[in-house]
Length: 388
Image (tube, rainbow, N blue to C red):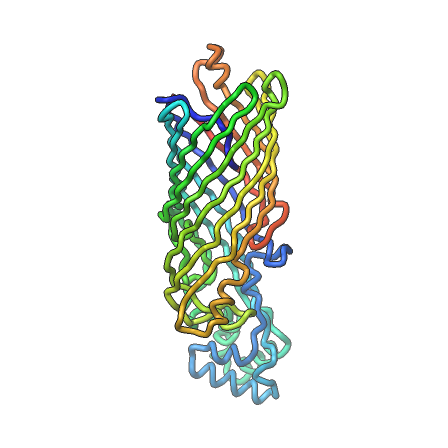
């Protein structure tokens, strides 16, 4: 969200801690439809794939012999790989803000990101696969269990052959991308106000890793520079009902990053890596909200947000041009979301000498309504704001 036009008085400091909780298991795909996070792991596997992906020469030769003996074709289906991926993300964001003048406030936010990934892969075997394993078990019992296990672990077998890290469940905590913010209040009147906000985001998080088929970076690896316009207006005489609209643009600067070049539009896994020039798409954001504040400090809000990121551009020269275009496919993002908020503030009561300390407690719920190439799950955010 944009926040309001309000700024801190000169000399006032404002520490706050924000806690964001999200469970992710599905997303809006490239056509806007819902799909599982592990869907890209769901691939048809042929006997040729099984044999080419084997790392045991004896087992490879045995499998190829059994395929021929049973009258199978190398391009027949051995099964379909399956992937189930559930991700829990908790982001704690300590923020310190200070009023430089009565018109200018600056702030620094340092997110601490904890990611817990639960991943499970396997193979839904075809009738041919059941026949082949039964034949192996009959002719060579010592290879029976190994053959079945390697077939069931077809996803990680292929990843290992291509030089990827295996897919496992894990938990990690790391600093995200640090953000410096400045907000200048252009004007404030009896019923409305207008402010300009500028942001610079530094690449302090862990960047994407080309060796992780399921990657969970805590940053995007490059610097962002953004600006936003914010307008507030009270809608009643008591100043209890307020509207807020905002619009902003963020430039994501170019960088260089190692990526793997897809072989086809149906398989993104590849052993071809290259250090590429990358330009993440710029971001447009806009939204509007209404909030109502009761005399005793309780407030409710409801809002709508829109965000669009242009497709990413890559530039390299080691491989055919179409492979760079495949890498760019489905990198643009669109998100429509609704947010409900509940808060409690003692600031006005403190000003009127009705409360001993000024603070705010805020809680919000965000629901993605529609999108392209973004997470579909909703999330909660909690915030404690202090003033001194």
